[in-house]
Image (cartoon, rainbow, N blue to C red; front, side):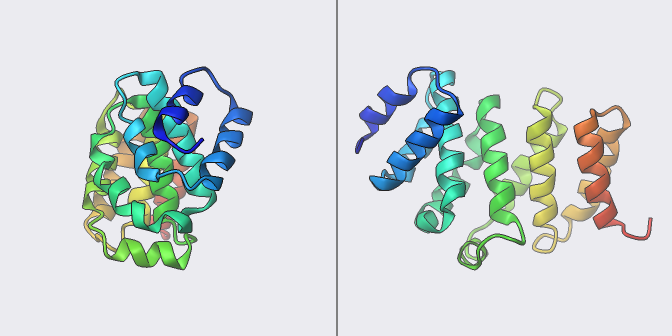
Length: 187
């Protein structure tokens, strides 16, 4: 599989984790253009877009250093992710990209990219009641990871987490407590 049409054929049908892992290896082996995969996550067919986003997450997170030149394109498209199923994958990628444990090459690359688009989108996802809890959890951690770069986000994140935790699910309670403990260690 070396072109976009072949990939579309592969992800046009239902697939499970095994198929995603198989396609991940093929995409990496054939040096498939990550930009083409990113573009597929915005396809009008929501199922195809979801599968492309799932594959994107696997491809990118397995070897992020191989796609340094595509990070800016990925970030530049972040605010365009409206498909709820794709949001989860983009938020998870952003969480890993911004992690203090990210590879030094990734951290260096992010220094040259304006990440406010990611911060703003993650806040939008936190606020939107229709957004899935996993997206909110990954988004909150992404914002948390960027708190030193954008100091204003710490207070806003605290407020949003406290609001979400009032009636939130166990997942948001757990993530919220963890992040709030880091934000306010003496509280």
